[in-house]
Structure formats: C-alpha cells, structure tokens
Length: 426
Ligand code: ASP
Ligand code: MG
Image (tube, rainbow, N blue to C red):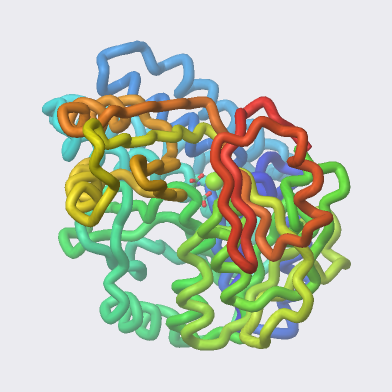
C-alpha cells in the first residue's frame, strides 16, 4: 500500500487533473494506492471569502458563481462529448452547498464558535468537489477506482477549524473501511468528522497531514507528496535564485525545517511517518520522472545550509522600568500573558534589562499584549519584519547578511537567526 497526496496546484484545471491522473496510472499496477487530494487551485481561499461575506450579510453570490463556473468549466473540459456525469456531480454539490450555506447563515449567532463551526461545514466542499471530479474523470476514462469519504474515516474532536485526530478511532475506521487492498482509492485531504458526524477540518494546508494519517494507520510503504517544486529546496526559489535540492533529509532535519517556517510540507506531517519509519517522498508533478527528495530515518550527512524566512513578523521588547534586571519573576509575568493570549513565540532573547520576542504579527494580539503589560514594562515594538533562519549555517552562507540592518541576531552551533526588515531580499 502506498499513499499519494496531490495539492491544489496539481489540480488547478483540466490539464493539471489529466496530468495528475496519468501519474496515478503509471504507478497503479505496482501497488494498491490511496490518493489524497486537496481542493482545486485556490478554492479554499475563495470559500473562506464566500463564507465570511455570507455570515456578515454581504453579497457573496458573485464569488460563489465564479467558483461554481471554475469547477463547471473544469468538468466540461474533462468530459467526453456524450457525457455530463462530472458536470452533474458539480451541480449537485453546489446545490447542497448553497442550501447548507443559507442554513448556516440563519443559525449564525456572531460568536467565534459559531463561525468556526460554519467554516468547517462550508470550506470542506473544496475537497469534496475536487475528489469527486477526479474520481468521476477516472471512471469516464475506464480507470477503476473508488471514492472514499474521509469524514467516515478520519475521526477528530470538535475543535472546529483545527480538529485534533482521535488516533484510536481513526485507526479502527481505516482498517474497517480499507480492507481490500487492491485498486485505487480517491479521498479528501484536510477534512474529517467529529463524534457527532459534523464535518471538521484539520487546519490550513492540512492535506499533507491527512496523507500521513492514512500512511501511519495502514503501515504504508511510503507517502509521496506531489508538488510544484522539484522537492525540498534549501530556500524559496521565488526569492533565492540559486536554490538547491536536497536528495535526502532525515525526519528530524525535515521536521526542524518546518518548525522554522519552511512551508513545503505541513509541520504535522513528519511525526506520524517517523513513528512508523515510513519514507516520505516529495516530488514534482511537473517532472514526475525525477525522484525529488526522500525523507527517512537515516541520518542526513553534510546537510548544506537552508535559508528559511518568515514574513509579517513583529519584534516586541519588554524593558524593566526601574534599575532592576530581567529575572524569573518578570519573565513569569510575561509568559503568563503570552500563554493567555495564545501567542506563539518564533524567537526570544534577553539582556540584563530587556526581554525580546519575535512573533507572527496579529494586530489584536500585539495590542492586547502591550495593553496588559505596559504598566510593568516599557514596551518597544516593530512590525513588517522578517525572521531569517539559516539552518546548518557556514560562515560563507551568512556573509550575505553582513551589510544589512539587523534588529536582532542569534547564533548557535547549527543555526543562525536574524530579524530584519521585510524589504531585504537575498
Ligand atoms: N485545501 C486546504 C487548504 O488550502 C488543505 C490543503 O490544501 O492542504 O488549506
Ligand atoms: Mg489547498
């Protein structure tokens, strides 16, 4: 058994879907296969906007029709002249989508909980649409497959928008539902259901994680994530012209990269695979002949430096007001507030009289942080920053930052980290 995961870019139109299905077909004879798909292209973003506008009483029909036409166009491009099966499927799904949306708008009470519940019921349609389109297209071209509803398999709690997986129940369901290990199964990434059968989602970009859940529960031979990049590169090729490909990375190395902000795979993906020593391949759907990056249990030798950037950062510094020092007591006060506000620290540093943190900039969080601590500390704050981590740095690799205005710098044996303005490119 193997698991393949295809993201939105690999399903963005009819040609992309034809290419993706041909990748599935060229692998189908060797092994039984589970294919996990995301929503087509930027569908999830579009669904988020439609939902927000609908719940806020604003016009959403224009965006809804645009999204519907996008799926209908893809459907008709994939159909033979005499068939309209895919189109019918898309129409039916949009019909139930509109009914559900109206129902949710009527029930909406303005609370965060009510928004998050509605989010999962609506945004999950992206994956329901794409998986149905792919499965029906395969039927049409004579490729036997079965469509699986991930909501009947992936069991989560009721933390809507960030469902936590119930591994025991999910394991049982996977084993029950996927008994015959032959043929191709098409299912959805990103979605599951809680014990009350309400749809849940696993967090943005969560389809990689779904792939890893299936791989773990099935003791799969491998998980392959098909991407629009050649594999895992040591920098974002959009900002770094000489980005290099890693042939091999250890689970630890890859997991740490996702921690520092590498967005090529979802941070939750590695653990379920590492626990069972299941190899992860990250490969290009544009160049399926190439092997991409393999991630596994062996140590990586001589890993060349990785440049990982996180944008939209804020640097907040707390300075003691009198002539005292930063100590355990005032750190406890700061951490207490940070925890209560659900702020995630990307980096921290202290000196005798000040303590600095680098966090993702969210206006309401930063405002509340300042509000709650300004009676005790003098607080300085900068936004529009980027955090750059050079993992496995060499002196030569960090040469390029020498001339930059660095607001904060940190160095350990393996990592070099700086906070700089967002305008710096390298
Ligand atoms: N479609 C979802 C998203 O865009 C899940 C995923 O792509 O992995 O967040
Ligand atoms: Mg997506």
